[in-house]
Image (cartoon, rainbow, N blue to C red; front, top):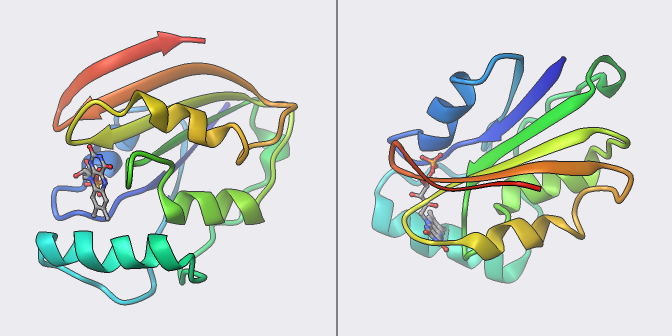
Length: 144
Ligand SMILES: Cc1cc2nc3c(=O)[nH]c(=O)nc-3n(C[C@H](O)[C@H](O)[C@H](O)COP(=O)(O)O)c2cc1C
């Protein structure tokens, strides 16, 4: 069984759309803090949150990880790295001994995004796949 954990913020909901195409149980991390709708201001405001490392407000889906052997993590690439909402969720919700697929949605080539998960998920997990999308197209895939 797969647990699909995703965060998606832009109006287009790129990460959410890709998450919904994958079969399994879906868990959405939702921003409960300030909602910025205008895209250029999103860059500015969330860029500020990234830089200041302020604690974020979001719903934190409680998952019984014992039910799953696979975990899929999907979020927009922010600042070339793991999204700050996804990072804080993973810091607070540790799972072990799972097969993990990491998926990013972005505007360009961000292969370094995957390395930024190395210190975020527990070492007992085995990352099995990386995938990167821009808009609706997959631009990078690697079986690890
Ligand atoms: C604060 C912020 C930082 C971003 N940083 C990057 C980046 O470093 N590289 C990139 O290609 N796209 C970047 N983007 C664009 C998003 O990754 C891209 O639009 C993504 O597909 C949005 O996914 P969503 O619709 O699920 O929110 C950034 C967007 C925001 C709001």
